Image (cartoon, rainbow, N blue to C red; front, side, top):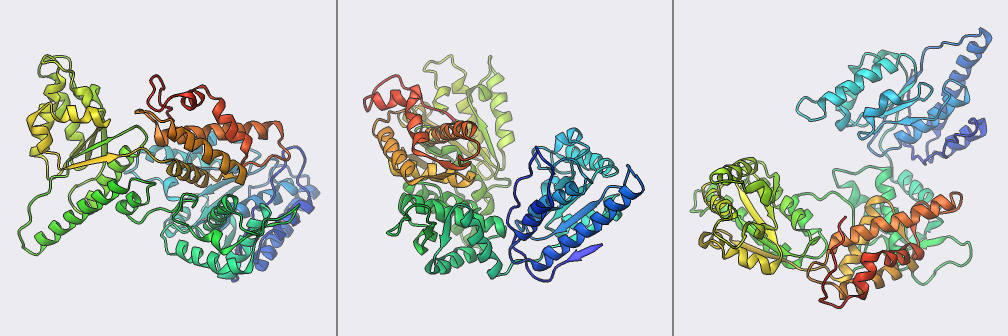
Length: 573
């Protein structure tokens, strides 16, 4: 039976399935009504309930205990609410006692646990690219076994498939149990009116409303998101509203609500401001250089790398037109404290150089002293050559490179450096070597071999993040993982980060410290939810969560320390 709708639905998440009591008809009706702008879809779901009711009645009349499982296929755009419709279908199955337990959601990370899923649970499988077996992927065997097991399961319990691509549709058609899929629901692309309605509904869940002047800015943000290849309909709408709510928490405006009034999202809350309080846009960058430019801080690093890419592009175009073009040496030295983004930038540099045709693969190989240095004469040269071989076509990133300089002639680290220098020259057309570490030690390292410094054309310094930049990193972590800061918590955090920055030392952990603080704030929030599961928000970080950060011994020690004191160990995350 194929059920398709010609109007565009906007879907709101159904209420949570209770594990303690059976699903009621009122609950099913409420969830169907929660679909926004989808009258035909509501009618189709009600038609499915009628059909399943007939099945249940026939089963009861004839005292049948073993009925064939019922399967569904939901087709629609990415982020179009297929999971939400699957939850409603699962509740309908539960209501008619055609399933005993709530829906089991399959993801890429939990697919290996499929054999452990209860036989009484309907199973929802999003037919995404990473779940489709492909022999060139590492998870080919795992995904192949997953689908083989799912086809066996389909003989005894309901399966709901969600498809949002042509490749996914073709894969589903080839499944053995494809002919047994009785219900097929199609969700077409969304209209502007539906997305706006969903935005209002989603905001209302968090006690927000969109005022009339904000609609134009919301539409601008939506159209910008729609221009990206990773646009995901309702999920993208949620991200836009999440970002606006975060901006509201930081700067509510003049009409802050009183009592239980809904807070108003203004046009300004949908604008990504250039100052520190702007919530970073969690969109996939168009290219590696764009991703570099979107990183927090690092102004000089970005400028130098843009110059490098511009030079590489110039030389490439000159060569294409038959003009003289000298080969570019892309070996680099990164200097700076931990957590300032050196590894992230190195990875993106490789990808950017690949796009420009300077590297064949653009991958990153990280190496430390133990990967390069052997234990006897001749061993080091071979180990180093093997690592370089792995990195050919990409970037060889050597962190704490000065560990290769032990300060005496018998150390094999010098042999590793000598081998690297030769390889850097021989493979300079298809290899980028990046040495990384603290600024002062880097200078001593570059002086250990006369040929080392001359082969490194780009020396980039990664400064410590300012207090404002640390705040921006924290906000981005919140946004990326779906957490929020109350206005008071944001002020508390801003003050704490300014203090930590003011007390920083040479080994200040920068972004790693912020990541650690973020994880600890989540722990505090989790504790509150554990103690008050009915009323505590699952995503709102409060002032007490930020205040708890200073109770950790390492943070408290840093707050007490003098600017250049001794003894603090950088927090890692």
